[in-house]
Length: 238
Image: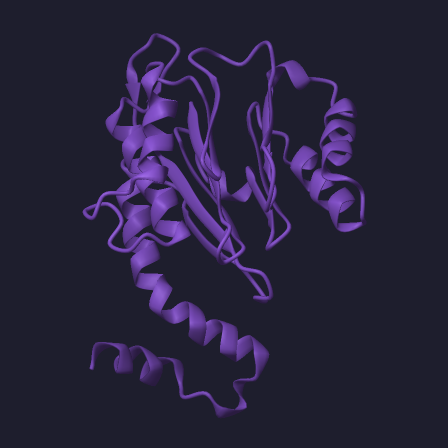
């Protein structure tokens, strides 16, 4: 009941992920990121500890492939898990257990991989890859990584999105967007935790947040010379 896109921008070094699902508060459990190093998701029957351990091992210097395999090997129910890892270079690593509900699996594209389970049809993953690789002006006003990820979610939804156990359509009740840039103190991390149509709300929240991201980064680095937050926000409208 989840469709996810992991992507990267080789020019900027950004890594990111966008997820939409029937489950609530997906941003709290599925995505993990080390900006400039790796981005991961664990989904289907989610066990956040898998992705957390992958990231910890990579951060400690373990080879990413080894970290991926070791972390999966420690889990007792890998047949129910779907785990993906994307790095700045090379092919993504993806595990889809034997008990992942159809339609499920993954599809790699140029600098992206689409991963999903309980999908409405076989076209959802290919639509997401196409949405990432060819973002439309309407869904991506400018083709930065975040907008390409959001475009992929839009495309996945338009292709049918997710289905329930009886095959009926399920709304996306939560969604998240995480994009990390090398050297930044924290990533863009937008979450819609409980909604009846989470994807457009996610885009709206991102578009409202983005102009403030630089302020929050500067505030974390050195707040002494910054204007107040409301003055900064007001200057954006002037």
